Length: 303
Ligand SMILES: [Zn+2]
Image (cartoon, rainbow, N blue to C red; front, side, top):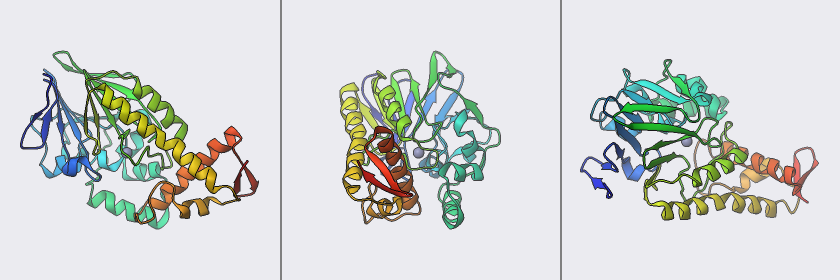
């Protein structure tokens, strides 16, 4: 099959085995695009979104849930399939297992932790899964009839963030190719790993590329290359914007207030923590490259 078949229920079929459950608003956060994979023996659902929960599940019955990583929007339906086995990369197991584990992944403390805890439970239906099993890079799920899902560890967004390769479909999850650019603003995020993961992902040859958020389904390799190169270019753009700002000595708090990730009008529980983590990661890169120095404790200036 070489064209997308759309159905009224938001299901887009990409191949005999693979369909995308397109999330509300084309998978814009808080929803996302889940992937349904039907083998001869078993059916897997990757990243059950809040739309899957709102729909009351999927057809046919799901035997296996795979989370690409331990973020709340990718796990909304984890509690809706209590009889399905559940898997995530071993590095993200704590976030799937319990709410405390999830909040640790984000690195939240105090009031922000309490606020976000409420949001994750109420808006994202979070339910911990004690029975979660960890997978590793290269692990293959065999669903029967030649249908397989291969895990590709692509860390940086979280420690365990993974892409999934299903025949000629490559699910990139939160390497989401949006104009916002790469998100590495959590305690478990890493700029250098994200950058490396982008190089690995770029090499994957597929017919369809699917992101969890609103880029959604990307048709063909040429378009994918265009998008991933533009996405990756956001990293050096942020980096040089920060270096320009460091013409005079600045603290991380000043960098957070200046906003390098979000635009000034954006409000959200996590905005400041994301700005802080992102600034710290870029400062570490600058110091490593000899582009900036810490002139006095907590103050940084471009060299
Ligand atoms: Zn995520």
